[in-house]
Length: 268
Figure 1 (cartoon, rainbow, N blue to C red):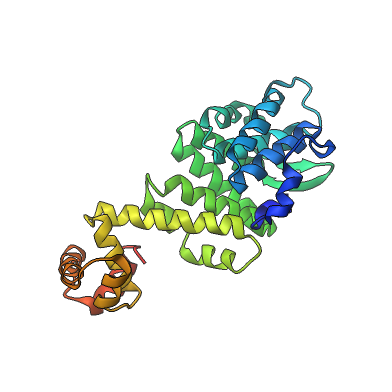
Figure 2: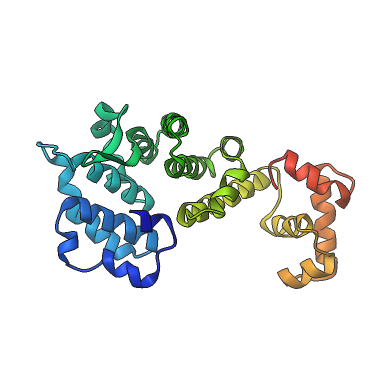
């Protein structure tokens, strides 16, 4: 599981593929589904997911049941198989106050995090974010940095397109910056992607076109008009004209005020 949290070396990905004894039980196949989803091996991830689905209906619910179900829910959610992930809503409710443990050790953080992913898959974004916030608070209380970050990334991904302003308020950029400097590369990369999507969403809502957003990012990066034009493949006059429109939309007089205004609007 630790390998999944970093960028997995391609040669190690073989551990999560093929019909080996390592993948002989439901928990191992669930982990393989998540690992392959993280690697972008969608076909393999889907196969392991489908091979493990009967665990949802297991009446015995022995020691590995909860870890297996929660890993499956995360894998299904990551793959966009919301029909599968949503099945976790009623299954996890009795365990909402627990942590996911396997052989006596906490291995996957609070159950409520996975309940949040399941509720998001079911379309209840508000309840999902509430659960993720509760889970994050619990992680912070016990000093569990990995699952604290996981909750933050989940929150930002859930809100990036529906309520980007709130997403950025709940997960400020410094959370992602700190993760990028750690070993938690996989989630940090996802967090950066969600953060940029949230900023794009805010920019679109205030009336900036995709081209104007690109020009604005160049201005925020302190590049000259010529440099922005060369990088984007536009003419000097086009970038200059778009800059004027950007200043008008942002309600500022010129370039000297763009950084402060962009920060105020959560665009930077």
